[in-house]
Length: 191
Length: 218
Image (cartoon, rainbow over all chains, first blue to last red; front, side, top):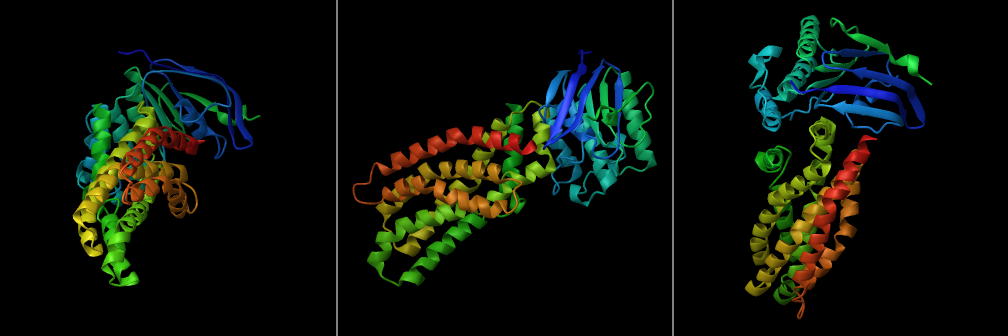
């Protein structure tokens, strides 16, 4: 298995004129998971995007070894396409296989993405993530819109991913039950 | 390379495929409508139509190129596609370069095809039509590059679609001057100059568009 690592040193994030957090450090080795908790607006999503390289840090360094997969509020699936074909675009890029059954989407393969419910879209985004086979998972509010069964499924998938030597960084205001998962309150790092 | 091929395939399916992202046929139809309206407006004066028709075709082509701008970049930004590509190490520059190619394939050849009936409507002779077609072949790639660049710059802005049109028109003036200028007596160098402007626009587009997409994340 390829080595993966995710670490942040003395990280600070600024959005507009406001510094959201500063002095944040963590290091994740294979098999470790971290739950970033906090109220709306403390910078959880910004942290996820910083770690993914989509935003530039205001200060500090991010060290990332290994491919990262992101699930956030955008499913990144073409709305007019049937679910299976929308996912097929990503499997062509990633070389993996679509994971519809695992996420309880098997019956929805022919349904255009725009007709899916919020929870079904979240499941579809997770199917995309599974197909990507990234070592590092970046989950931004992965439980939003999911029913209880869906929440348990995400927790099981995350547990499995970490047991297989993956890393997971999850930002959520909800509780996220994965064995051995560390937790930080982002509000503690507010300036 | 397989990633870029997959991107091109998706772009073409979106831009060409049965009006998914709307109207492959819309720009050529609009172009033909302008060519049809012009004789109604100036009257059935055949020599006047033949003399000015080439210029009208160029103006119509430029206006038709503005129509699809709002569908080129913004929907993918909203869907989060660019974020997913960035995480997979596909640079925004490549995405934009592929998009320029797909956009040109979706509107350039159709526009050149529509120029044939348009020239008949305007009473343009065969040798002028040949110059117009060569000029469009040299100029439409530049129009496509310009369109994608402007679409990336205005994506996510309020009134972005209208702004994109207003930005494109002045920037396309060099293409229009050289393209339509190639129709004037002694304007044979115009096509080469149109091609040169196109090359400049094609060279700039991926970097300007890529920077615009990255900037929209901040």
